[in-house]
Length: 491
Image 1 (spheres, rainbow, N blue to C red):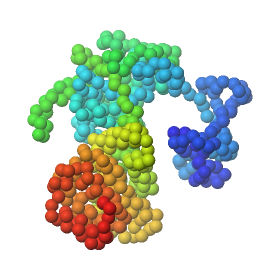
Image 2: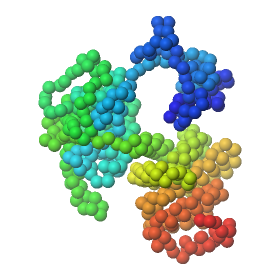
Image 3: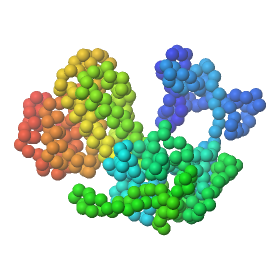
Image 4: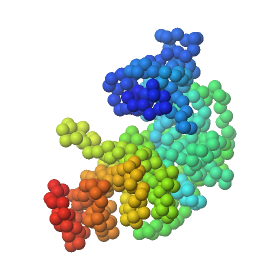
């Protein structure tokens, strides 16, 4: 996406324009000219690392400016000047020349033994004993919860090569948390606020030895060399501060419907095991992008559901509006509906198939990470609260009431978009409880939900023969009742 000067102005400075991101580079909105901020540089000279510069919008002839309004930092295009500093990240030529090598900022999986990878349990949460990291095989090796991003900890070249003994931090993509070590030397995931460099810095070693490698600043402040390669280099991970090795412990546990299974929990150990070596597997660009979307959505939906639970308990919508931003929720749902939009009919066949394949992957990742269940939970809570009737004054207010209605309708549209054309996701409704829920909502759907509920039912019955075979007489009566009320619908 491109940094662009927008045509809107939401700042207190009415002569300024908003700055945001846009997908295309058409027109002058995303063109900026670079000017030196220091008299030591003149226009036409090369821009060097550490230089201060001024960015001017070609479209509006205003400066890229940052300021604070109502305790919020904002960026806009203004007649006020802001100096920006140039910091290195990486070089395009190094990535083109050394394809297959591991760089800072890469999203990848840690493979262990070829048939399992480093991940978090599907039941992971922040409770004691549940905030753990494990080695797991099977379907998780293609799921979003096994994705990690490497972030070099002590270098200007954040996108440089990952080298032996260079401190780095490992960020879990769908939770946004860092792999770190607590006071008991246990491996856990830490929030960004808690994650100090000493707790979360790890290094890669070629072999285990007791000698701690201490690199000088001049060795760390460089782009590095192409050494560690995907699928070719086996690495051993060591916690930088304590010198302990990342290893594992095995234990037996019982799983419902499976019986006894062996699980491996990642731990820190003084010596470790002979098979502690890990291989890197690069993620697909599409799945790493979807994992970041999942992180944002999960956080927003969880906060929204928590707000609904509080509203249900104390019935005070003023507190609900303080904790939940309905406008942000509406925009998130609109973006998600577009994100899961079906490709247009007039597209070329090959491009359409590629879009459908990418869409299917997005749908699968959202279902596997539990976002589908969060949507269903939010719909249930909204329906319960709406049926209790204490929101009359809240819904009467123009802005909040409109946002509430839009959220109710968008949730059904999003649910339909996530399951459309996806047999696995539609099959989630092939049980009596889910199907009964679907028809009960269809029979009592509010006007704000529009055809969203009908879209969901249409997707389920078209793409899941199992659900179609489970339909009962009362379900068919609901459809007949709808026909009598509203007339024939193409679906």
